[in-house]
Amino acid sequence: MTLIPAPVSHIAGDGSFTIAPETRVAAPSAARPVAEYLAEWLRKSTGFAVPVAVGPASRGDISCGLEPGHPPNGYRLEADPTGIRITASDTAGLFAGVQTLRQLVPIAADADSGWSVPATTITDFPRFAYRGAMLDVARHFFGVDDVKRFIDAIALLKFNVLHLHLTDDQGWRLEIDGWPRLTSHGGSTQVGGGGGGFYTQADYSDIVDFARSRFVTIVPEIDVPGHTNSALASYPELTCDGQAPGLYEGIEVGFSSLCIDSERTYEFVADVLGQVAALTPGPWIHIGGDEALATPADDYIRFIDRASGIAAATGKTVIGWHEMGRSAGLPAGTIGEYWSFTTPEGDAADLSRRFVDNGGSLIMAPGDVAYLDMKYDASSALGLEWAKGPTSLEDAYGWDPADIVPGVEEADILGIEGPLWTETVTTLAEAERMAFPRIAALAEIAWSPRRERDFAGFADRMAGLGEHLSALGIAFERTPNVPWR
Image (cartoon, rainbow, N blue to C red; front, side):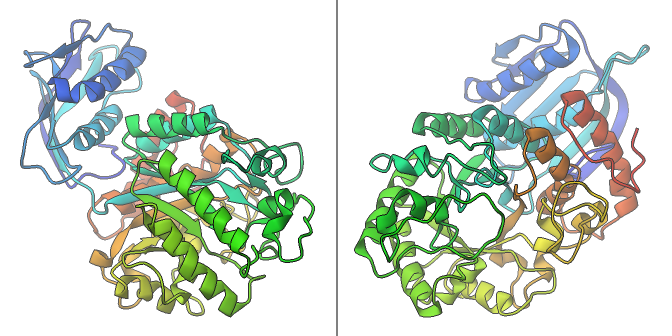
């Protein structure tokens, strides 16, 4: 069985269930949105009518049922010759079960058995609550439809978070009332030129709503106090000398900073974070805090102390890159995102432990195994190599988040994330190709129980997933050591 991520338990049965022209999807009214999603996908795949029936299932149906007793976001899938039954305690668990069923349904009907699903019983639930991907829309801009397509792609692998890196030196991508030049001027560029782009607040709400329909939570990032050249170029009062720098289209980092001693800076931060929080129903807001090399160390700590408090006052749980652990004034429960290497460098481990000591937790995104913008190998046309060289599929699969930071246990880890920075990535197809198949390895680490890693077995299952990706039109890299079909 070629399932990614691998389920907690899978028991093969006898026979199979064949999806027929009369097959329905049955569900209670509370689960109807999930049933409609499944039925629409089956219509496209099989060409059958696949109606949705609200109420009890009949023989030959595919049913989506809500019942107590399953772990959060977990599910049970049973297939036998009489039908398919997916049950969960919540609709997020049903949706996860539907993603498993999508991988069980064949790409095309078999000449003898038709649209046949092998008999099986799967019991499944996630290892980590936060299973995230990140898309950098600041270095290169990606429109609403591209972001929705990326959400659909990661949902297949049971990711439940999309972190949007909305602001950086090269572009400001979200409309903020009262600060129109952030987008009209600061959003007009991207790496390498060719113009930029931005989301209106209605666009952003459209993305958030679509993500919610796929049980994906949007985490917005407004990166401060560094990575702010697009804001400084738009509003010179955010600089200390009142002079606006030029717009920037390169890829260097660490040269920009908000003016730490100016009250206008904190008015700006409060206005931006307040609007972003109001537009985002999820529980988190990310304020960056990384690579603030142009901000003196004492100024950085003073700024993070104050900015993190402003962020927390919006009612959200604050997330920041692990450098924010330098601040002793972080709100209790602040979450750190670790982006050093599988062997921590410098003070990365110490800074990360401070989030845990402060009642928070960690999101693990080690640069040398989880960063999806790294080259696959030295010959890759796309990507960078700063994270200890290229990152192969084997590298992406061969680590564990509980083994990185000494003194941090699995219970201290909220989850993992695969960041896709876009310095070299200009189109959605390029973004998909950089993400897939490595993001599938991260999906398995985030969802499946910790077991001894078996790359050969994973590679066989990856080859099966590759057929599904091809059928969906999702671009992916045909990496070595996978028996692609």
